[in-house]
Image 1 (cartoon, chains in turn yellow, green):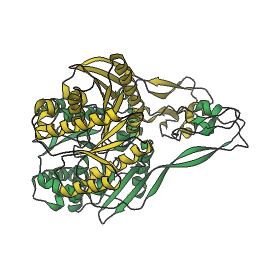
Image 2: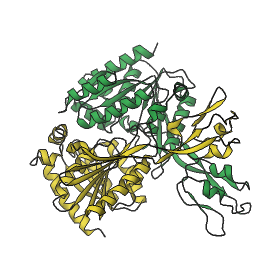
Image 3: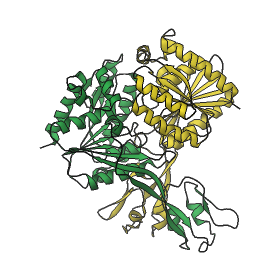
Image 4: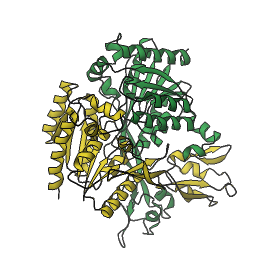
Length: 296
Length: 311
C-alpha cells in the first residue's frame, strides 16, 4: 500500500481540488482511500457531497483540572506553567483550557495534590463513502490543540481501512502551513505532491514546505496550479525547481471550470471532463501512476 | 468543546492586554481566501489617511505580509524554548523525568542517564520533578520575530523554523514583542493563520473586533461557519468580507450562515485583475491602483474601522 500526500505551504492554491480529481482519475488504476488531514478546515468531502457513514469522537489531548476543594490558592501552579494556561483570579488559579498542553508541570508543583490531568475530546473522525471510494476526514474542535495527533489518528484509521478493504493507494489532502499537522501528514508517506501557484507569496511558502519535506527525506514533485496568472513568478518557480533538482510534475493553467465545479460540489474532472484543467489533471494522474508503481 | 467551558472569567483573562490601542483581527477559516491581501491593504489605507499602524503577521507557518509589501525582514529576534540539559554527575538515574514527560521526548538507556530524543515542547516538567537538581535549562530556537519600521507603518512578523512544531511560542512571543515595542500606534491590525486552532485564538485574543475573509464557494461557507463559531465562543465581534464575490457560488447558503451568527457582510470584493497585478508586484492595490473596484471596497472598510476606533 502506498500513500501520497498533497501539501502546499500556502493555503487556497488548490490542494483539495487536485486531491479530489486525482482521487476520481486514479480510481481506474488503484483501489483508493481518500484521507483529509486538514483537520482545521476539512473540505475534501465537500467535493463529493459525501454523507458521513460513521463518525467517532477522538481524545488526543489532555488538560489540567483543578479540585477547588483541595486548592489553597498558593499560586505554585501559576508560576510553573510555561504556556500561560494557569492564571490567577482573586488569588485562585484557573485553567485556560485552549492553550493548556496537559504537560503536567502544575501537578508536580502542587503541594495539595489538587490538580489532575484528564483526557478531553478534541475532535472526531468522519468516514464517508462515495462510489466505492472511502473518505476518512479528521476534524478538530474549534479552538483546540493537538491537531497533529488527530492527523496521526486519520492516518492510522486510513491504513487500517485500506488493509481491511484491500486498497492499494491512500491519497491524503493535507493542511496548509508547515507546522505540526503538516509534519504529521508527511511522516510515513511515500510521496509528496507540493502544489503552488505563480505568485511570490506562494513560492515563499513552497520553499519553507520543501525544507520540511527534505528533512524527512520523502520524495517530492511540484504542481504549478493557475500556471499562467503571472509569467515572471512562474519562471521563478521553474528556476527554483531546477536549482534544487526538483521535478515539476504538471502545470495547470487557470480554468474558470474549476470554481464552477466547486460550486456544484464536484471535482472538475467529473463536472467538466473536457476542460483544460481536467486534461492536465489526467496527464498528472498518468505520471502519478508511474511514480506510485515505481515506489518501493 | 472549548466553547462550552469558556466562563466569563476565563474570557476576561484571555482578552486582557497591557495596552489600550484598539486591535482588529483579520482571519477566515479557509486558506488562500485573501486574509493577507485584505490586512495589508487595510493597513496601507489607514496609513494613507494619516494614521499610525502596526500590522502583525501572525501566520507563523506561512508569513507573507512582508512579500506583499515587498519588504525584507529586519530586526530579527530568536524565539526559544527551554530544553533539558542533563548533568551526568548529578543524575541518579531515577527515571522520574522520563516518566513525567508526556511528549515521550526523553529516553533512558539501561544503567545510563536519560537523553533527549524526541520533540520537546519546553514545559519544564522534567526540571520540576528531578530530585537531584540535575537538569539545567538549555535553549532551542523554534522561530524568529521581526520588526520592519517605516514612517507610519510598522510590520511585525512571526516565523516558525521549518521542522519545528512549537507555533504557539512564536505567536505568543510575537504578540509580546508588539505590546513591548510598538511605538504608540493608533491601531493594531493582526493577520492570522488559516484554521480555527489554538494559534488562531492566540493571535486574535485581545481583538476588539474581527473580520472573517471568505469566498462564496461551498468550501468558503463551510470554513466561515467554523471561524464564526470560534469568534462567537470567544466573544469577539465578527464581520464578514466576501472576497471574489462574483465567483460562481452559492451565496444563498452564505446568507443563512451569516444570519445564524448574527453577523453581517461588511464588504464584497469582486474578482479584479488589478488586485492580482499589485499582489505579484508587492504593492498594496490601494496604492498601485487606487481607482480599482477592490481598492474602493477596501477603503470603505478602512474608513469604517478608523471612524469607529481612531479618535
